[in-house]
Length: 416
Image (cartoon, rainbow, N blue to C red):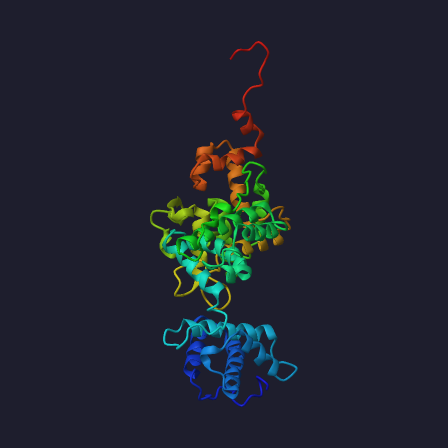
């Protein structure tokens, strides 16, 4: 079978039950600004897959990712498109079909109803509804729990106390921690402790094993935060290509990080209603659902206005920053902001010396503030730290600031 030479590849109807859904999916792709050339390629793949499903007499409700691989193996060689393109196209189709309320069985993948997926869905719902965690926090916890469930899901049962116990959890934690950083291990322990508490509260296990998970110590003042000099920050900002749409977007993102010290998740979550042009303020949705206002500095406001006026365009999403390529929509969270910073660092020829590229600009702002004589309370206010203890680490980058907090060396006979 060939995608290009298939009799229905040109767009003829396939007379199969989900043809209407396929057409609506293609309409959706048009609505999110896919190019016509890309749409033609995707249509050829999707329509050929629809005819393959019909010829194999596969029930729509039981389609899964394995069917994609089988379909790809049936294509004539050389394949008209890369295997990754075919797989990505059909997996996105599956996601769209699952989201359709009228679709008979929303869980197309055969593995979705597995024990692991069932528990993970219940756990993330618990984090949102019962614990009140933000989506950012849920995204931090979920990968750790998903990895744990891939190995231990079958054992999680009220009657499986012999196999699912403290030793099994600790063994998993130690195996994973062996090849990762202390921060990874700390987050893993926190996620597992939270998950075990959920299992006990909801009756999935008979004992609360969260108390058996060891605490991974975090030495907050152990390292000096990585930062850039003002000259390096200027070099990064100068690398953005202002005449292009991506350049204007990236410049606005970088200025928010460098001038206001925003966290990457706060930049990604910024919405159009958060920009108050008349009052010159910007509303920030920070950690722990905190909502705060910061002044909209002139250069930051100019960069945002240029991007919104020239490049953002019309989109259903209210997020300020959108993807450059189809599908049109919001950025994929803090990771996308970090990627923008990494690319800017590479263009400027600056080697990153630590993880967390987006936080590098935040650290740089705090460092320059303390070197110019700002107090810890002032820096804490700008960075929106809840306590000055969090801000205290920046005193390590300034010898002058350290002299101000160090006690004098005791002198013999001095009773003060």
